[in-house]
Length: 301
Image 1 (cartoon, helix red, strand yellow):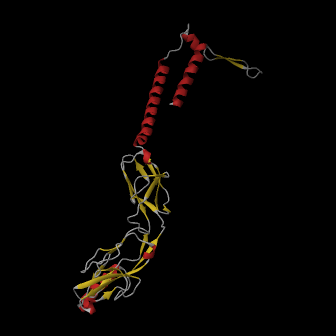
Image 2 (image 1 turned 120 degrees about the vertical axis):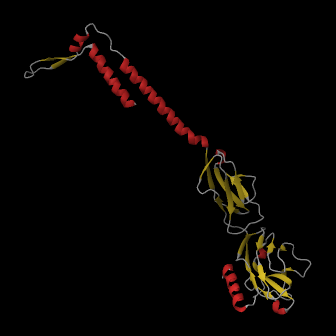
Image 3 (image 1 turned 60 degrees about the vertical axis):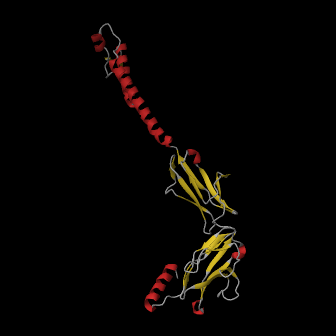
């Protein structure tokens, strides 16, 4: 039964019977790293008030009488690693610091009222598993892997087991960074921040996360280069075409005669074996070269 379902059930029970039932609401099973700190959020509802004594026990179903406790409000001295953050009204939160392997087990809360009918121990309890190693991974605040200079990004080292109060080692390209918290914030980003990032915790090391930062100058350089190149090409082609059209062929003594004689075939009787000759003048060769250059420029441009 989830916490929400339990709360709904208790509210329905109160509406039907008119009696406030005793209850304790605890978190589900907890996984934590050795030497870390875990906080067990807890709330309770007493049937009889006032509550005069609250206790936390480990691995005992009743947690009453002479049962060993990790916390007892009637004792002036308790284990300093177990800190009671609650009260005797409704809050029964317990914090365990510097977790050790022997702390593995099931923890239960008990309330005791002025009358025995008000005594109650939560039978379910909460299971704590203390691990030396865990699987680490890196989550990022960026929706996609594309980052640009001037932006900011947050890398988070996460694990299925809590590791609160433990120092995290951040690495970039296998070089240790100064940050020791589970969160690495980089702002503003530069191209030099590109690299492979990983986080480690004791004997655990995450997979590498590749961060690629694109320089904003690189974004605008390519269109600028292409634009300049195209512009220069257009101007150069225009200059060449103007030069071709304005150039005049070399003068000849008799332009009309030369024109008439440009292509003067000497045709012999084609029915008789022979050949056809074509006489070209210097002027005609110049014009042919002129036309060829024109079409060559058009092809290049």
